[in-house]
Image: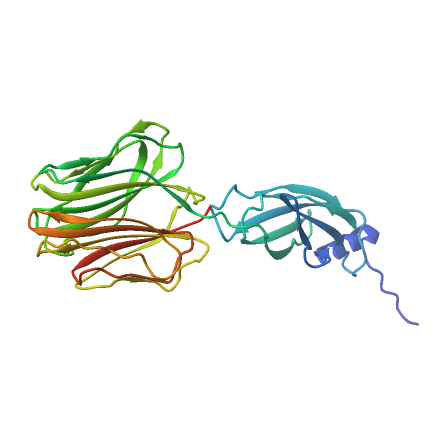
Length: 347
């Protein structure tokens, strides 16, 4: 006689044992994402199975979407939602919202969870088809100062609340090593130095700052070390548009040289970003220097040149909507120069 072996516990225990082997799964195994107006939406069939691979119609779970944005700070923040779905139910989005005004890539991770079941996770990458905003430039104020003083002020202008402001300073002083900016004041807050070139020849200096407009109307004043006096100082205030106001500066580079041309280069610039080159040059033989517009790319130019005391000088501010990997400017005289190059994130 063949002995009969009986399982103990009946259907409830067998169901519990099956449930221990259950894992949630998605069908299909990846998302199909479409751009619909200003929303990303998806359809998903969530199928749960028992331990033997059969559909389990008795449970429900929550689908939670979590988003990692590979281009943070661009436009409005991504927002994710959670939706509840039942076994084998087709669930439609939209679950993610963002204005598609940018061309950027994101990665979506969806996780299904249910009590007593192992979680299922899938990911999907998508690139939006919108156009990136173009970085624009408006010179709000500027000043040329040849007085023997310790500060230089522009005329008054009305800043825009939340806008990114750049303050660019070229100074020739009577200090051969130690002049400095002690403060920059104006209708903005959060003044932060981007970069500086100190004493690139004898007594010439460059500084660049970024700030956030506060909506007030006022002049911009650069204050310098009171131990030294001015020979020539230029101040430019530039308001950006279309930029990433959270993190406007992608990267910056300072450079200097003893002869023409100026040269700045980097290996990882983004052509969809903007770029600004600020350069100064000095001639100790009292000849004015002209700084030429960069030959690569398309640039708008603001330049000045002249003489003051025993020196000649030149200054140039060049703005582009498309960052270049290398920027070079010819000088009318092969003399020492300094430059600050700034790559600006689009919005």
